[in-house]
Image (cartoon, rainbow, N blue to C red):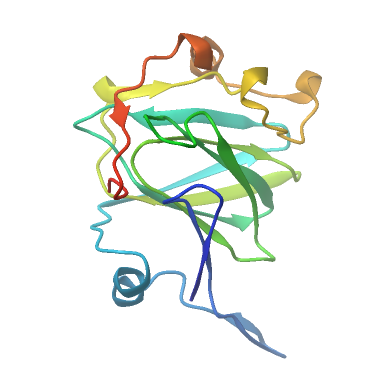
Length: 190
C-alpha cells in the first residue's frame, strides 16, 4: 500500500496495490502489519457499513473524549466525497479540511485520526461506505458540526436543494459556535 500525505498533518490517503486481470481484481483492503509499519500502531475494534442514495450527506461527526475515534474509511460501491475538518484547538490548520473522492473504482481509503470531524456526500445513485474505528460507538459522546456551514468552505458537490440530511445532522452547531474538546499536539493523537 502507498500512504499519501495530505495538506493537514495526520490525514492520510491510503492507496492499495490492486492486481487486475481478465477475471477482475484483487487487493488487500487492510493489513495490520503494513498499516502499523507505514502509519502507526492502531487497534481497530469496530467495522461499520452504510448504504445511501444520491444527495445524502452525513456528518460532520466525531465523538468527544474519552470516547474519541480514529477511522479508516472507504467506498466499496458508488462514489462519495469524504471530508475531514481539523477541530484541534491550537492546530495551524484548525478549521481547515481535506476532501477526498472515494469510489469503487479508485479503491482509495482515508485515514482520519482523533481530533477531526468527519462527513461525506453521496455522488452516485447509491453508495456503500465502510469504515473501521479504533473505539466503540458511544452515543453519550456523539457530537457534530453543521455539514451545511458555508464558513468551512467545503464544496460537497451536491446542490443544497438535493441534499438529504438526517434530523440529527440538521441540528449541529455552526463552526463559529463550536467549542472543541480537542487540543493540538505535535504528534497525531490516535
